[in-house]
Amino acid sequence: MEKTQLRPLAYIYTTADGSTTRGTIELILDTELPTLSFESSAFSQTQTGDTFELYTNQPTLTLSGVANDNLDGYRFFLNGDNLYRELHNSGVNQGGNPYAPYTFATEFDLTKGGVSQENGATFHVYTLEVVDVVGNTKKIQLKVYYQPQTATPNKVVVDQPTAQALINQYPAATLEVLTADNWHQVEANATKAEQTYRLVDKYGNVLSVFLIKEAATEQQPAKPDTDQNTGTGKDNQNGSNTGATNDQAGQDQTGSATTGQNGDAKKENTGNTGGAVATGTDTNVRLPQHSAKTTTAPLNAIAANQETSTTIRGQVSTNQQVEQLAANELPQTGEQSVKPSLVGVILLGLAGFLSLIGLKPKKD
Image 1 (tube, helix red, strand yellow):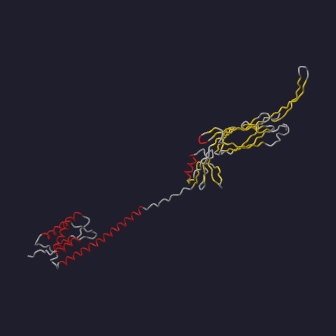
Image 2: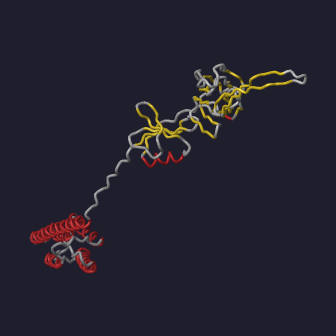
Image 3: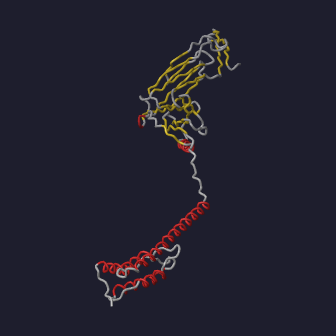
């Protein structure tokens, strides 16, 4: 026999009193199962055999599908309810089922019934079943998980490493790319710069939206030429120091010449010698810069000489002595001026004051 075939069986039945009854029995052989397929509005689904797990964040689930069999006369059941039965009058050996498949469409309110869970989530179980004329059955079980929709996060701009870190953070999420105002699923390692992506969980809730930008190349500052700059700096510094030294030397020489002129001019006025000579000595006498020890002794000598000329009554320091001291302590080229001691400044001021008020030493 073929896998689907009808064969009549004739029989004769004889009773105890000898009467007979003749008849025919139709034997239908069908080894093919009915077919059943469906589509739903769920965001994602997984399958284990004839059990499907559906995930959605929409409160209404739309379910549609097609049922059929190789022979007419099958029945369709939804959650145990017989929604359809096809006529069985075409015969088995006439080339199969002459009728069109049965299509169905229905909706389920996921906010009602089922098993309630946290945060408004629910769980439902639905069964689809087709039974043919000989009892072959095709059954599908649907486990529907509903979780209310969440708010979509704001889009952020990231670089490639950050985008990959986000993708790795949600390994079970679906990665989608926005193209021509539509989202399309892509592989996790297929991201490109200047494109917008989103990560969506199995319910359809958006976890993250990000735009990938190329990382800006950091401009490295130019490395300075240490040898060239250092050498130039030293040359400039040395040149400045040399110029300053020469200028100072010129000033010192000018000061020394002025001292000499002042000394010669004061020779004509013996009465004002003390004040004039003391003032010239305080302003223009300079000592070498390189030796601190050599500057102390001449300053002390000048101060002592000035003190002698201003404190001892009846004695007047001569211009020749001051000029001699100034000549001995004139600065050399490049030397800086040296400040006189405090005692010398005081004595010089006192001598000038006495000259102004007319107190002159007595002449012998």
